[in-house]
Image 1 (cartoon, helix red, strand yellow):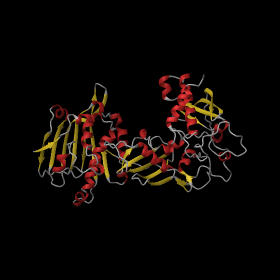
Image 2 (spheres, helix red, strand yellow):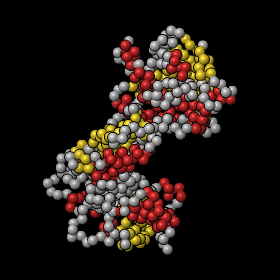
Image 3 (cartoon, one colour):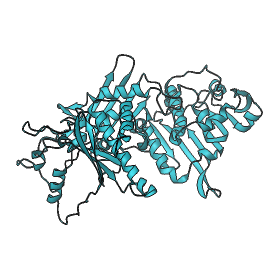
Image 4 (cartoon, one colour):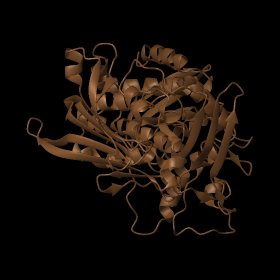
Amino acid sequence: MAQISIEAKQGVYLLYKNYPYDTAQVFGEYIDNAIQSSEENILGLTAGAPAYKLRVDINIEWAHDPEDNVIKAKTITIQDNAAGMNSDKFSHAFNLADDSESREGMNEFGVGMKAASAWLGNKWRVESTSIEDNTTRILEVDLTEVSEKQIKTLESEEIQNSGRPHGTKIEISELWKWNAIHKDAKDDLIKNISSIYRHFIRQNEIEIYFEETLLTFEDYPVLNAPWYKTPDGDDIYWKKSVSFDDHKGHKLSGFVALLREHSKEKRGVVFTRNKRVVLGFDPNDRTIGQSFTGQVGSPKYRRVFGELEISGIQVTFGKNDVTEKKLLEALCQAVAGMLKINGYSLLTQGDKYKARRKSQKKSTTPSTDNVQPTSNDTVPSTTQTPVCPVPQNENPEGKGSNERDANTSSSNLNTQLSSSPITPQYEPITLASDIFEHNGKLCEIEVISSNDSDELFWNDISQASNGKLICKVNTEHPFFKAYGSPTTPMLTLFKALSIAKYKTLSNDGSPSDMMNEFNSIINTLNQ
């Protein structure tokens, strides 16, 4: 028997159940420990088994919860074939107050297993067999009992020369109801864990099994197409390697690319640290990197993707966030200016490129799409001076543009050329209109219905050169299904937000400027 310290401030373990973990990140803590153990002991692990490969198995016992009438996890088991814990590591593994352990690599905070287990459930059984001494060490923990009785040490069991395979097995039971894992979320959980460990899976450095499923990760297909202005030109592989150093200790490296097809699940940039994803593993949480993706719902937003390794930026102890988001966004902005291939802007291509229909073939005859200027193309000098000028950051090459490309004339022509039968065109309806002042000139805003985006509403600046701003509203959005058709107050808010954004972008304003503009507009509209 050995005395294992579980010392910490009273009840601190029970507080971890309230930490804002994502379930995939919780399992990641165990996988991180296995990777670190494997890397630190790779010589010993491969000495007697040259073909050794790290393996982690996650198994869940499911049970029906009659109270909620759903199937939930009842018991969770995580097992690896890493090097296990020797006496010294095992004695420190459960002590939150001990800061003597190495804090490098995947174990930089030293609380992963403890925090993850405390988040999942009340009772733990940890069994670890060390490759160093072939000794199996077993400890059982009841967090409620530890907290209520103020227990500072627990008795562990040691089995010498047990003959058991090296590695660690952790079983969590009496799972907390508020962090319950539902069986119908299993597929998404598997995808997210795969996303976090994409590098290790790609390199064939680890096998992760979720029950009987071997986790895989397939690289996303990259757009290979001509520059959008020269559709008959040579194809370009739209993937750019990145390496940026601000010489202040902060670095970004990896790649940014364009998807072959628009995709909600694959779009967006993920950020890694120590080769594992810390931000963006879930496609619904890829909010960092707006310099690359622009406005939500825009073509660029749905096509740009990438993977960037961060260095010199601290992450939270749960390894699911960074402590300096503004700094990271600033680094992304610097990288965005480097994204050129053969002199062409990757981000502009993402915003402007439209895939050809199968019936359209390359021809020496100039494309009709190239004859008529798009909303952001340079207007010939003979064109009448605009009543309401287009914001400078919505320029001909799309640099800094966060607005939707709405080349309606080209869209209508493509529809006429499409094969029969012709699908009836969606007929927009004008929902509201108003006049507003911008830089000393009167402009018009028209709010119309639209179905060409999944977003609630967005700006169309295709007629901005004529002094007209169009706000498109998706009347089929779930918001309206929940709260009813657009009302006058709703439309007033849409108008104010659209105008505020347009005017702020035009004057290179900040988010606070946009908020001030909105508050000013909302007080004057319809008066």
